[in-house]
Length: 586
Image 1 (tube, one colour):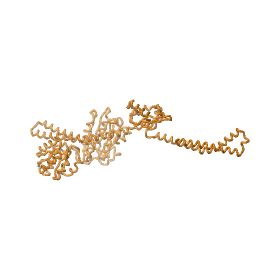
Image 2 (tube, one colour; image 1 turned 90 degrees about the horizontal axis):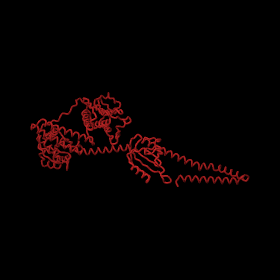
Image 3 (tube, one colour; image 1 turned 60 degrees about the vertical axis):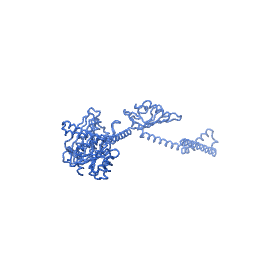
Image 4 (spheres, one colour; image 1 turned 180 degrees about the vertical axis):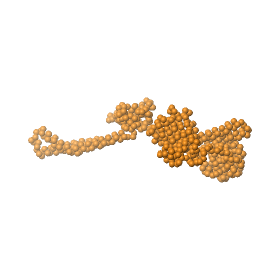
């Protein structure tokens, strides 16, 4: 017996006892007064009833009616509390009859589905069906409800406005006294945000995997480019000596140029596909914007017009060049996606200097320097809803369809700009386009921007014997050929251990070591450290196909006898470093 039934049984016993005691008191009163002797039987019964009511009324109120009333009010309050809690619950709740007729939905249900309580009650849950689950799915669901009294899982449903959304649903059968289903209760959660975050994290993991893949490919690819550019140089030297046609020499020069362009693309992939450390320096913003637009255009369809309007005035900023380019590319990619389905597809990139007092966003800007560079990226896209403008820089927020974006592009751009003491502002008109305006503080400079002068070979004053260590045979042979054309003797080694053996065999002849960093059996850094045990001031040029491996080379690059050369490298750069180190030791 539960507590509620025990309470009512207790009240019944109280009622019986009170009536019994009242009856006994009435009978005693009749006997004492003898009043019943002169009354008729009917009158005696009426008088007995009146006395019974009078004697039991207050005890009944105090010990029966009042406790029952108190219990009823407590139950009523609990029911009201549960009803309010159910109505205000964060999870959507739907209650139906066994035949599927909806008899209750809470406010969260209306918020998620778009159907009001009046529209839902009396309807059937199949009004939410998306069509993404087949008949067998629902057959398995109802089989579980009928056999186990419960079904729990994920499915896709459709809101009132036609939008599909994922939900986690838990349906339970509530049995009646006879064991049959009295009604069904369903509790579900909208998984839209959760799926968006999961997809964004999955996309981030994919990018990390791509970064790892690109890192491995870059080493081998840069080795090939180094060999191609080196062989083109050697062939060019021989062609000039043989008085080959000018067209041949020009083609060989083009091969070298294309090799370095390909290498630059690999570096861009490395920068955008994985985390890397970069140093800030004086950067020509005009050149950085032009190069970022060129890189971004690789992924822009030909039917999208890209207008570039760059001021001729010099604009120099203190920045991490790779990160600034990444921010610009992210914004251009965002504009590319915005114009995708628009009749007019155009992206306008404009760069110009501005005095801070003339800036239209000065009231909302934290930049207080005298001069700033303003970069505007406008598109003719669909625009952004005013309700979303405050959220667009939040990580993982995106208005794109599921799988079309990570929600990290704009937040990454915002973080990069603010880390450079800049500001970024957005304005948008729905269906007419969006404009991002970036302001960056300028570094005071009186020099006119110009392309850096080409590196000229340092005149050769000493020749020497150089040990070249690289596991890539074509790179090793090409570097050896280039060095031989400079007048040096070359000893070749195919890995770190072979380099150590060759070094000790020719220790007194070798004046310079040129070594790849990543090699089998023993890498270049450990190999050089072993050589320097007997020759501490041994000059070394490290070659690498990776992007600035500082963590590995830090312990050997912190001195003036160690240099780093990224593959592929220009022969002029190699000549300059070789002559610098040999002349220092010569």
